[in-house]
Image (tube, rainbow, N blue to C red; front, side, top):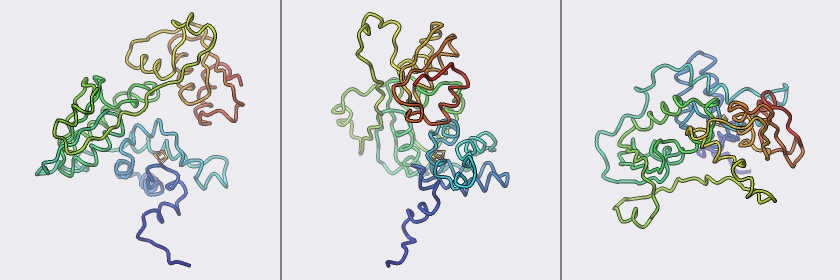
Length: 296
Ligand code: SF4
């Protein structure tokens, strides 16, 4: 048997199930210990180092850590790891002095990031303190990409987004070039960047080509586009009777948003069985508290 390689960080991640299940390998027990001791700021900073947007994730993460939590083996529910992240974010003190200081000297290298969503902002957060000059381009007038455009406001206030994007901008020379859509990589590459990061995401919903689709186009919306339109204030109302087709987390956001925009009879219709729906159990639960039935 080979000796344990304790130099490999994966070893430490793996022995803590929740940490291994978290895509960012957030050191969950460490920050929960800090919360238990009342050290919310320290708990927040542990999260900030590993997952960049603790306030956002504490409200919206799909929390793959929780099904892995060992408490779930001896009790009905796991530790509320995700919500504890929000507890740290909401109760922390001032953190400006704890962020990486902008470098005294830049390293002379320039990076372009396409898209001002979480991927590019994470690149900026990690590279700006090292002296890189980062230009983040986005066609939209505001930063944060899908965090801002697709997550309903009742789940995630804009103040939380602005605060956490602000921390990244403070880490060094991060220039947000908003309202500047990149349509030609060739043009961008001709601008003497040392590297280009494409973090544009894949923001496309799925349409359904059923009979009558074209005739009723005005009253049929694609989930993520509709959520964006609501988010940017282009859509403020919906009819009284609404049907949401689909059983994923986007569908759950759509039905809850429809309720808030005037939908009185909102039904979710899903092809699969209830247990096979793609939405996470807690998303289904929240939706069922607010909306009339999920029909499987
Ligand atoms: S809530 Fe999300 S980011 Fe936080 S530990 Fe769990 S999986 Fe990781």
